[in-house]
Amino acid sequence: MNQVPEARNERGIALLTVLLVGFALSAIAMASTMWILNAQLVQKSGERAAVLNDVAVAALEEGRGRISATPALYPATAFDTLDDGVTVQDANGATIPGVRRWVYAGPDGVTSGQYGVFGSLISVVRDTFQNQVVRRLQVNQESFAKYAYFTTIEGNIVFANNDQIRGPVHSNDEIEIYNTGATFYSTVTTAASTIAGEGYGTFNGGPPRKRVPAIPLPTTAAFSALETRATNGGFNIAGNVNGASPGEASIRLDFVAIDLNADDDSTDPGEGFVRIYQDNARPWYVTSQLSGVAGNDIRQSPNCGVPIRNNGGANEIVIGNPGVGATDIRFRTAADTLASGGALSDATNMLTTGLAKWFCYLGGDPRLDQSKWGVTGNLAAAYDTAAWNANVGAWTAGGDPGWRPRPVGMGAPDSNAVWNARPDKDYLWPIGREWNWGWEGVIYVNGRVAISGVLNGRVTLASPENIIIADDIRTAIDPGVDCGNILGLFSGDSIIVSD
Image 1: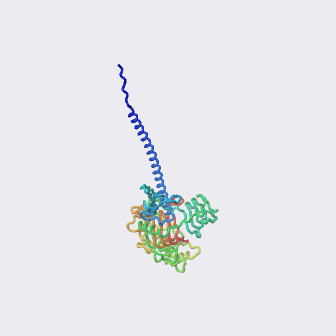
Image 2: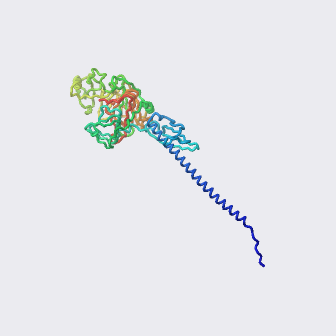
Image 3: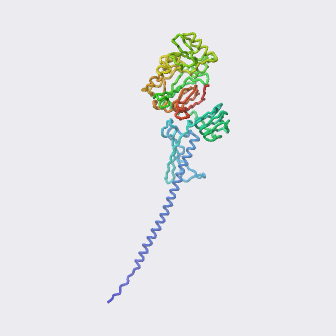
């Protein structure tokens, strides 16, 4: 017999299904909402971070502009604060709510300056939600050493006779070129509105730019930093302003390049030196001037005279070239009294005639020595130490008057044979780190200073007084080939070129 199934009440199951489906739909809706909200938060956070980053980068650029326009804001040591929690404006000048910035500037790395002046700008930006961005920018100070030629006042200076200038040229004054022409291989800029004789110039570095902003020279406040660097290298030299004219100085720096490794040149690192001559009582003698000479007569000057060759002692003759092979050469001035009256007569005649072949040298030059010179072809014999030491202006210890010995503790190539053969070895000061480990590239003279010789090195000479170019200055390395040798002259008064 068949049984009829009992009917069940399934309304509860339907309710449960509805609830489960509702929960699922609610979860999907909530997830979607959270996804959207999170995306919005991420977007806002990204926008906020972008704002903070833009503010930090802009702060660096603004800081760089400020220290460029006002160099005094850049500290010599440590870091200074340029902005201290200031509010920030957008491009429209409106304040960005809740954002503040801090900006710091200062030197870093090697701060002595001999490799350049480098530093950092650091900006820190924060908002009210404690979001923070820190950005850093390295900066360097441009050096006047990049210019092959720089003047603030041109005066009577002209480019002529096909001058070759291989490097940037700038003047705050009007540049003048003569009709004999000049070639410029790099940029030429001037603050003036014109260049006199511009058509006579050849500008391989592009057309010259006029009316550019004037570039101010460093202020004398920079002397303190240069003096410190010179002191570190043993080159802080006490001087004075003795002299009857601006072109006289009681101190002369004579640059010397020496072929220490016998490779037939004196251009290698460590082959650059300087010797220092001082005569406080006769600054006119140091620079070969006439203010201390009777009647201002060059024929009476102790800087001038004629070389005489002694043939056996009894027959002295005047020669016009001291390089002529001879075993005994003497240098005589008009005031000298010689054993041979004939030689004195010949010397006097050469000093007083229009065809005179006499020679003039700067004070302290060994060629002014009135004693035996020796054989010119042999280094050891060419310099007679005892004879030089017997003469004012020779290698006399103690300096004034004479050559100043190298300071105790300053290095030298003492194991080098060429070095040890030189009688002036104790008076040669190295201008490089190969022998002078404290060298920082600066020579500081607190007074007038004259310069001469052949430079092998990179040197800044600073003086608050006049710097006198007393004789030709050459570099051991041809500047047209390499810029390995650089001489920067920084005077608080004038740079004078003797004629």
